[in-house]
Length: 505
Image (cartoon, rainbow, N blue to C red; front, side, top):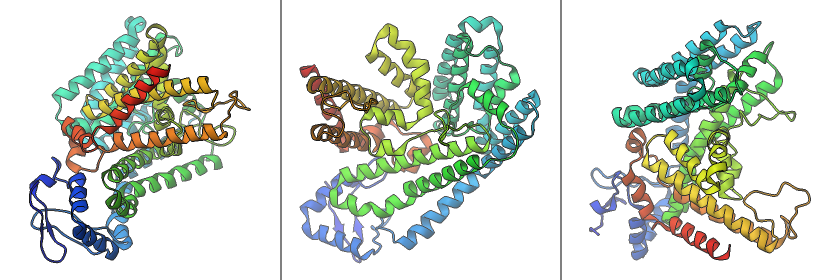
């Protein structure tokens, strides 16, 4: 390890081996240095207590904890104004769609054409010339769906076409351009594949070019999602009539507040509150902070997608006034304090979970079994996200983790008659001898909750805020270096968990 020099006024010159490939300080090496030098640790603690700013020498960048005023002026205001500026055209297009739907006396082809045009305008606003990637896919997919000669094999052909198109984009388009449109492409692929399968199974009898294009390009979910079934979309735009209703406005206001809160926590507040914690407890605290910041950015996108879907008039409510499963996107509380990793997987993106369950898992399970169906589901999810090592590694790891946990907890529940299944028992009272609130069940369930939070910190650590990595997509080297810093411990724990399950099953 290189030499570490202290300059004046709390300025530090870090040696080259203190930096990872992204140019950021390696927190593991820094903590090792601080633990070996008590005086240096004391100086760091003094800086955090005084909220002074310390700067490294020359070109190195390492800043102290921001004050609350700094957080407000330098982070909260810029992030909120930037977010509003970016999504304002999308929100305006969604409002126009709602007006068109409410003012139409019937669902006419003209309405669907207007939805499609507004969707194209929104896509151009977000992606500029990269819109051609999405338009080309949409045009070919629409042609396949409308072809009567391919109806019997439409599901297979559309699925293969979507897969080949995504793979071709991975290799033929620059990483920056492809990463820019990959999310919107994923939503389009899910719509095309689901509609093709429903047409093949005759769940959807027929569709016209205007309705197909409006389904694929509707502004309400063309950018951030969520995926919704074709028939649900048609029913929604056909039944929405009349003036605005109170329930609709309350849900929009709720989604707006939540999306703003998630954005601020992810971008600003976590960085203000948690650095004290991360410096004191080392690299695992740092991993938890980075993973949580990523999760809250995901919640922001989910709440924003709910809001755009509501604004555009494509949403429905339960009798209790809550969003239905088609338009409710995420359940953050089940992710931050999960009962199990299975609950995390289900709650992360409810519409996508439903899509994978109906169009992948249920198709593979009857002939190949549960384990193969699980890995086929995670493989399909990783391919939809693009050929990205980071996402594939996380999703496949999560698949193995969740299968192991589910199997182990099922075995423990049957052996000891405890209410410790991966999913909480729906029966009332619980069918197990030792119910959900029994002290032994509580101990086991809390232990698995802590284990799930540990795995989430490990899996989410590579989703950092490195600007270069975010623009190009996270590389294999970036992923492995992050996990290497944590000693690949989560994978080791998961392997030990599986071995324990195998021994007692």
